[in-house]
Length: 108
Length: 151
Image (cartoon, rainbow over the protein chains, first blue to last red):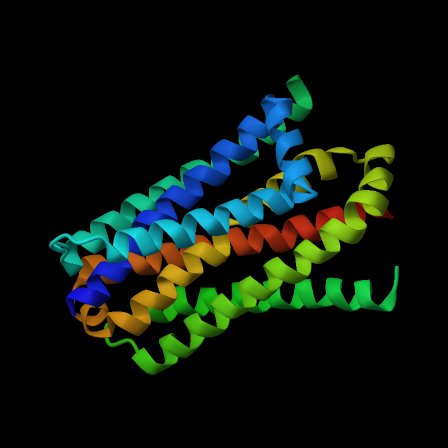
């Protein structure tokens, strides 16, 4: 059971990181052209670069958090609280991306 | 547009719609007092696979056709915001869906007893399924707006 709790706990953490990563790299890429150009030149297209890096962040962070030795202290109650925080992060990130593109189109 | 691209676009739409409908069902049925675990495991697996396939098929269409052919038409037309706001937001917010769907699927597959016994966990997972479903609906609506802006 501890292994299953640890895997789910790791995926919650990597999900939060992936959601924040997408938001940060997207807004940064739109406001700092060299970053978007680097993504486009390295991965042939900036969107493909974001896809690969987002999947990479999600998978690598999950693997690292799952295999590093530590005593898992998560309970089903604490997982619920962390998922609630993930829900909040996702709503804020979605609003930030939509708000950013509205701002970028109408005011920049 | 070639037949391969058209098929790819249709597949993207279908996978996205299936994923969204299925995650609405995961949201609705996950809130029941006695949820049917096998049913929710099957739904969450189906929804997750659908979103991953929507990511791959949509990505192929976006990279090989949309940017070079559709985007310039929209930007030169009467509704340039359909690309600059709607499509830009859609193509980035979409990244959240497969990732969050994998988490919900793992919850129902790895922790079925905890999902039944711990109300906090069940409610949080249902909330996450609801967010996936609502964002998916926004994706579908965005796709309709973008398609309309090309005509």
